Length: 162
Image 1 (spheres, rainbow, N blue to C red):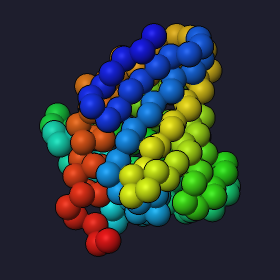
Image 2 (cartoon, rainbow, N blue to C red; image 1 turned 60 degrees about the horizontal axis):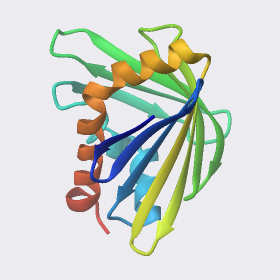
Image 3 (tube, rainbow, N blue to C red; image 1 turned 90 degrees about the vertical axis):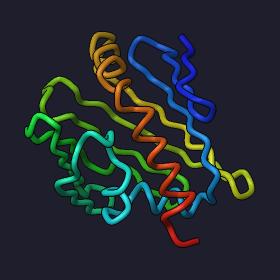
């Protein structure tokens, strides 16, 4: 299955347990890596605009933990967390990913950042426990997914020092 999310993002499901998400950003790889791994930047792009940033922690080392908390319009807090498995700045981030409100929503996410001049292509391979988890993840992430990555692109284009 191939699904075009917008002009610069595609999502495919190449197997029963995998999702591949590819983003293109008009920014150098070093800047994209920094925006993905620095709490001061993450606060400005993570999640849809309808949610309010509460906190984030990022212990950026293999074995280090990360956690992001947002507050929804309903007043409830929602959190995502994981552990860094591999890091090679500015080309690779591999981490576990868990939406804490859905205990079975645990994945391994591997992002490679490919430099193409002043542009960067981020290839994300998400491995799910099973087919059902993959489909739940795809269905639940779709509503906020485009907006989150649009916010990320805006941050790269307008708000980060180059």
